[in-house]
Image 1: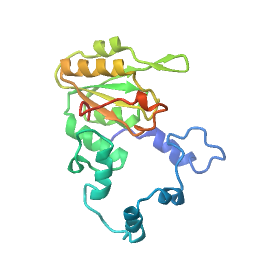
Image 2: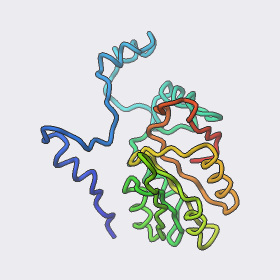
Image 3: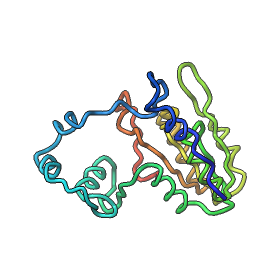
Amino acid sequence: MPITPFKLERYFAKHEFSAKYLLSASDCESLTMAELLQMATPESRELWDSLNLGYTESPGHLLLRTEVAKLHERIAPDQVLIAVPEEAIYIAMRSLLSPGDHVIVLSPCYQSLAEIARWMDCTVTPWLLEPAGDGWQLDLGQLEASVTREPACSYLTSRTTHCYLPARAEFDAIISFAKKHQLTIFSDEMYRLLESDAALRLAFRGRCL
């Protein structure tokens, strides 16, 4: 059975580089290469200047994995795998899930977080964010009502589509709920470290994938 086409990617493939004004970008404003290189250490700049456009180590260059590991707690470079987001999501879902599993997906979401599970014959239950003022809010009661059988169940979350950041108390409640029901939490944190206030940043401490 083919995977359902990723509608957002198909939309961008058609319009992203042809529209005069783009009001639906899903990425952040990026740096130019010149701006990026101004931030490089002497070691990084030397690596760039002598870069050979060939293969590197399968999990990613050791220096890059080392820098990524520094952004997380209790993570070593050999636990880091460099991959494009879609590839990483696909690998994670194929590793974590089996046909018949129950997957609870925070929604709206990056489409592949739900579609890959459906393609694998998993039951997918949306956990819908609710509008609140100029943002969103979680209904933890809806999460509790979604767990209909155990233990093969996963809760997946991504801030890529909605930019919602749970309050610390909400996140701790989700962690406690996951432990109680033996859930795996898959947290797609592409925009971690871009919080408007660093005090709002959630401490994962190995509690999520």
